[in-house]
Length: 85
Image (cartoon, rainbow, N blue to C red; front, side, top):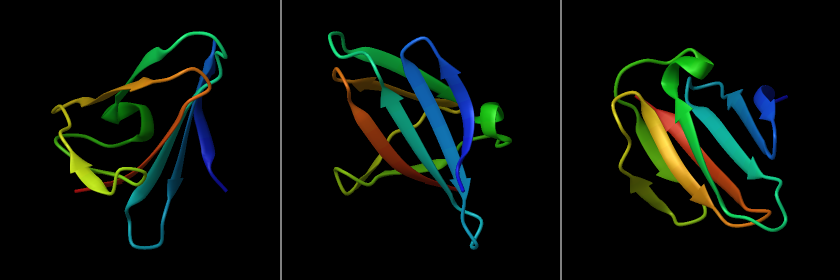
């Protein structure tokens, strides 16, 4: 089961650790009218340093910052990522 690591205002962030050590990160913008910029810091789910981030919907690796990622989501948008070292 995924763990909710943030649930405030109009955003929810969930993470699930897989058997091989990678993690699945899901971001939800629950606002039906406005886009949202959601920033996730690695330390929020017990990671550090630079991580590899694979965008499942776009089927490509995306650039991540040393301390996390920022994602712009459309109204009611959802993003799904696989995070690994």
